Image (tube, rainbow, N blue to C red; front, side, top):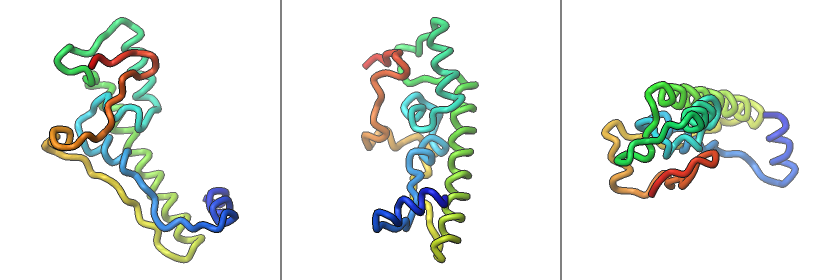
Length: 132
């Protein structure tokens, strides 16, 4: 927090809020290769290993993640959200004000992707093509 704040202040800027839209989308929505690039970590590595071992997602669901990889995705997104909370607290203490988090909370009904083009659909992950 100290380094970020010093760099921002040196540029004459301030931090008023932190965005956790992508982590919130990955945590609050169904596990999918659509949100895998947002969080990376062990989930991305497990997906790459799964694909490298010859597995392909089903033709009717090219963004399918095996259940185990989905759990890793949600766990990593949760860790990143908590880290953002801690960073916001530290920045707030150093700036003498609260620093809120802004973001998405996903959709329990998984309806966002039917109405809005978010998240952007990756065409490949780690060199493994995702069919159109």
